[in-house]
Image 1 (tube, rainbow, N blue to C red):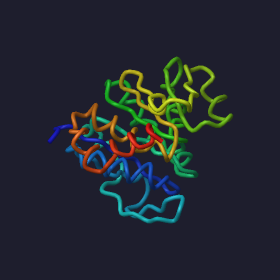
Image 2 (cartoon, rainbow, N blue to C red):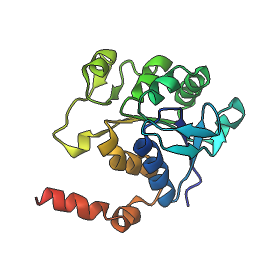
Image 3 (cartoon, one colour):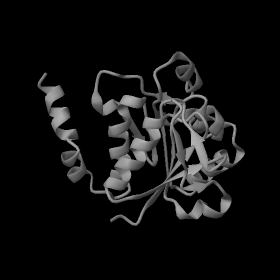
Image 4 (spheres, rainbow, N blue to C red):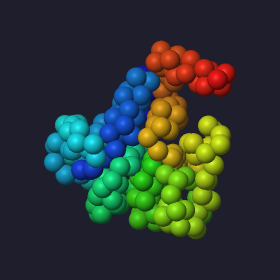
Amino acid sequence: MSEKKAAVLLADGYEEGESLFVVDIIRRCGVAADTVSIEGEMVRGCHDICVKADRLISEDIFDEYDMVVIPGGMPGAANLRACPLVIKWVKKFAEEDKYVAAICAGPMVLKEAGISTGRTLTSYPADKYREMFSDADYIDDNSKMDMMVVQDGKLITSRGPATTFPFAFKLAEVLGGNTEAVKNGILWNALCESIKNA
């Protein structure tokens, strides 16, 4: 069991897969992960799935975490971007050389926090994000699996719902989780092999 811990931020309109699969995979790999709501205890996703968050965001719990994860989903990502405490967390994680991870629409929070300029990153492949990250080294390649998750130091980004599993495995890996046993156990490796041989 790793001693590291991740906070997966939730706001109304969060993308369920990009949030809950991430928590599931990280925990399966032996790394602690909490869902952290920016509003109330109950949070409704963009597909009307309601979950009870483990924690509510506050400055008091910041030091408990080694990674902050920003899922996509709309309006969830926009709600995270509009939350001053989320922006404060993301800036502080970056300043303290902790991991910051975002997927799909989530990287818009990185832009708002001022930590994306000059960084290598990706997001959901849409023109509005290409324009948003014109001052970054924006990876826009859907042709290779290894480009679906982009790591630049302690900044990790990914493209969308279908890239949640490789994204979650990368997060678990950098936090010291046992990813290979889980990849085999949930048939991830078998799936990848069958796609390769299709």
